Image 1 (cartoon, rainbow, N blue to C red):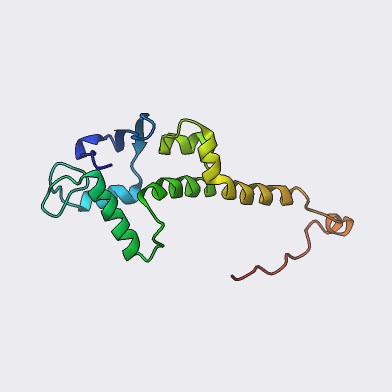
Image 2: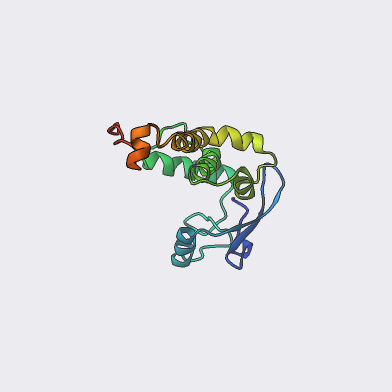
Length: 155
């Protein structure tokens, strides 16, 4: 991330080499990031620079992300690596397949993605499974609709 420049942005995509796996990546720029990039003046060569326009070192970028997380009220355990994990989880919650997630995160195997998306998969799969049981009773089959659902827990 600290090595990225605006030259890495080509045709609405960020082209990079994933540091951890060495995978060559071309990732579409999310509309919110595109909006932010359009409104942020180029301040130096790097995509993320210091106030003075100097490229940030890896460690400086790490500290910047940690400070932003603290300012947002997130727990101290939130780290830059956690962003990759959070992206995996959010993609899983949105229904992305492991291969789709791997295309964004650069993971080489689905085992690590499985760890990140286990809860999202469990929720989605349990919803799909319970829907296989409706309608459940003969009365419900005759009426054509299931009985009312239980109230949702507000917590």
